[in-house]
Image (cartoon, rainbow, N blue to C red; front, side, top):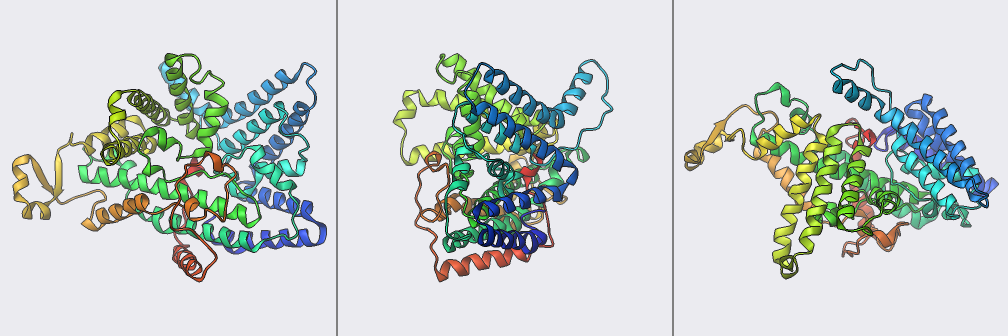
Length: 509
């Protein structure tokens, strides 16, 4: 059941809201939370009912373990926590990485692996991290008094269950204990449906539009002798924008849907393509994952407290692990390594005297293109089915297969011929200059327009607000006729595309 499907928008969401309101009115807030938790489990089971028992067993066992860890330590807490971490990560590794590991071990010894990959339970990467965080908080004495009802909702809450954000216990559980006089507040409904409309527009109108130019190139490189430069750039930049709008759309919708029920989730996406460095990029992209890896992996490994060499090793290790968290494939691991190396270069550059001399507009003109190009190259590995395909595409992008333009263009620009530019009439995805214009306009919108968190500032406070960049915008939402019309227009345009249903990209991870 996708957020951008008719069954979700016109059946599940209205019925869930109706049940929440009736339960609150007749039985109180705790009954309303129980209804919402049950609806979230049903939402999860809609994808594959066979995975519901695994989810419920995982939730129940981690809740029991958390209760034990919250008691005074009599000497066994260290082993309980270790067991919890091993079991949770073991389940994730079994479903997500067993086939990858087995096939690589077999290849190492010159054999082929005939086994089939296990069906990956949807959202297991996210709810595993949720539960690990809960156990660590219980061990630290920061999650006492949590009821099973609240914990079940914390893990299974449908806006964030499948693709995040990664919510820490103290970012959500205290909200479930707050008293309220109404099931729904008008201000929550207003900003919630506005964010939902923005997200639907991004996903259904923008992300799915550029997606049509991605797969024909990435998935069929092996069918051609080489990918023309124009096709390669169009596919890679289209994927760069598709992933941006797709992920930010889900993040906006998760925030909006949670706010409808009076819950504030952490912000997870803050205009990452505006970043002026890779360090800045990771403060804006998948923010909750970055913070999780920092607090629960990088810092425990020693962080930067044990010298520069150890810091560099820790940083590379964390980024590679973060890459593999996205998927069981060498392309994901290399993507993490690429960003880790870029972070090391970024840190080294910041220590130079030249970096301190360059500031203002010259710094922006130098740092933004370099940062964006680094990110784009990384996405090429992230999306490619294998490292060879990624290398081939990058080679095409930078002219290893020659420079080709449409024959009609070359007829008008004959002065390009002496530079080795050739004409071409058969393309993989390129059809007309309007595609390039679409990409340029969308990239300009990404760079110039505020993000949803900036728009909602003042009406919505994410639970991780102190971790977000401080960048106020003049385009601030308020309950007015103008914003109502704009939100309604975006929603209407999105609903016109209901027949073109597609999953969110982060569902794959």
